[in-house]
Amino acid sequence: MQSDRRRPEILEVVTLEGIRALLESLRSRGFRTIGPTMRDQAIVYDDIESIDDLPRGWTDEQDGGRYRLSRRDDDALFGYAVGPQSWKQYLHPPRLRLWRARREGHDMRLARDAPPAERLALIGERACELRAIENSGPGVSRRTLSRSAL
Image (cartoon, rainbow, N blue to C red):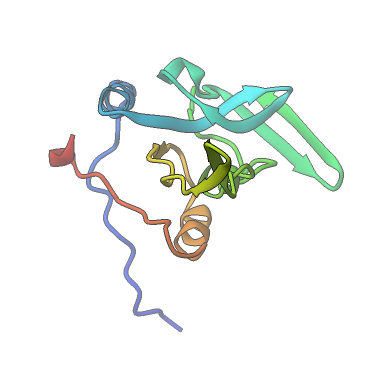
């Protein structure tokens, strides 16, 4: 049985220089760039400042109760399976000030905080992760940058 769904055409392959330029452009526009990096013998999501922070040439081997990093035969930047953590810690931070107050004479006045204005650029999400982000609730949106947006 053949599906009516068409696979999107690959229009262009992004080069290493293209990824480097993308990261620099995002950071210069005030985005916090977060992506895969190696830490504590795992590929985890964390702040990345340059292409050198990505796990170039590394992959992860996962099996029941087992996680290990190993070298690849190439220099792939995103050549690993979905890692041991999710993007949730960045999209729904675990710390949130519920209220604050200021003293005015003998009185206390409650004040509301403005929501954080941090702009995030998530680098290297998988299709399944993008779907989970899209379905994670209000306040989370996905924008795809086109070449003209850079």
